[in-house]
Length: 375
Image 1 (cartoon, rainbow, N blue to C red):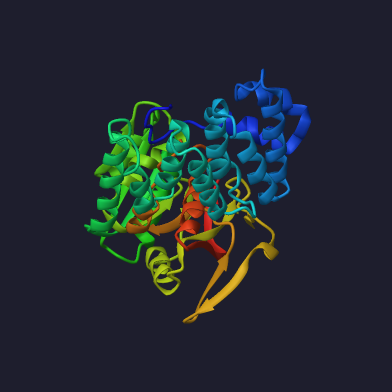
Image 2 (tube, rainbow, N blue to C red):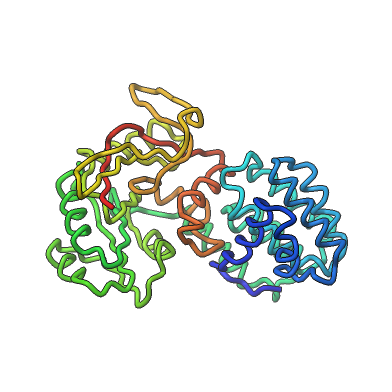
């Protein structure tokens, strides 16, 4: 059984599954090899059928076939890896939502409650989604010595979420890597456009070798987290965890213009639309050479639902993280970034929105030419 690991790297597994789901039988042999099924043609075929079913959003057939695959205890380690990839990495935009994976995890555990991999799988599901009471109920039925690190993590995570007391109103969180000049402009813009004075700025520096240190000193940034290597956006894990604010606002380091009072605007929308826990601005691209601006679209207009409340408007649908807000309490409630290593392929936005959904919350955009980025 895989030891307790708060941030496993699922990229290799995700790539194998994603290739098969998009290309089908052309990648069948690679899929079977990746998950140790080269000598189990029946199991490999069942797994392939299940993945193709999910490709067509046929959750019933997918679940039925995965349960048939799991009938052999020797396949449970492979099933556990595939299952995690499906609900953590692949299905962020699928019609198959998290409640499906919750039900399937419970059924698989119910059919083989004594199997270590079935035990780990259901604990991992509930821990990933921040469903602390569910996880602790399962844990109470398991061998205490085998899962003691998990129990400590669950108890601490639940206590942190329930007892969180903010020290500041806002935490502005930025990551940077060798973009000192853009970071300089970004920090100046934050100082100029923030509507509240009760904020902190946290900057994670991913092994920059340029004059980033001088820029941070110029702007008086005290909360700097120096990383000896470039972990890309996975370093958000450190920054979000360290934030002391009531509301966390992540801001890309290449933002060169923000709406006035951007922090208060985001805070007000989170308050007026409490059923949406992650809200961001739709960005406008700025071409630094020509000065031309163009609206950045992450999805067709028909994928967004317009909501109006108390004179405010939200567009519910795929949400950008270049300037987006979530309360620290909500972030803790959904388990933070537990469960995988963040990357450009496995970004922070789908992780936040996927977890919020299982807590009955959503994500949305403030659309329009409100935010500029430089590339």
